[in-house]
Length: 133
Image (cartoon, rainbow, N blue to C red; front, side, top):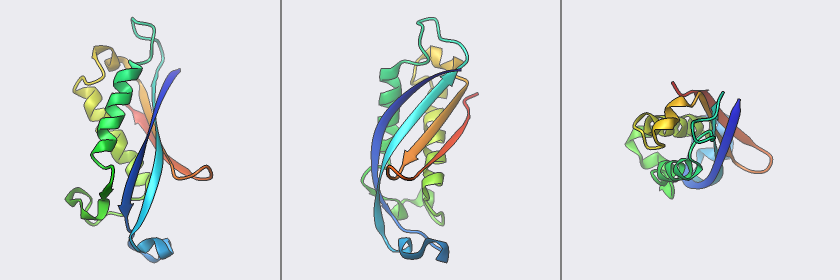
């Protein structure tokens, strides 16, 4: 399986509900380094997994929808704890929709799977991965 990865970052504010989260129940900020890994079993006709420039643009666009936002104020997340794991899936779904719409070009249709990793620090991260079919 071939893999290509692009990286960007995301800065948000949010709070959590539930005793599990202790002091994180209060409003706080988070800065994530975000990796988008794209995978396919065979290279496309151009000899790549995906157009790395288009992949970077796509990730930047998706993150731009959330960057510098208080996620507690977004209606689409009402009633949800916007945990790192939750955000990894949300970013995955938004990128997958753009791939399906053709934003990464026609050869991206051959992508097999994708993984989104949100690094909270050098010690902790969470991810979501799945097929892109």
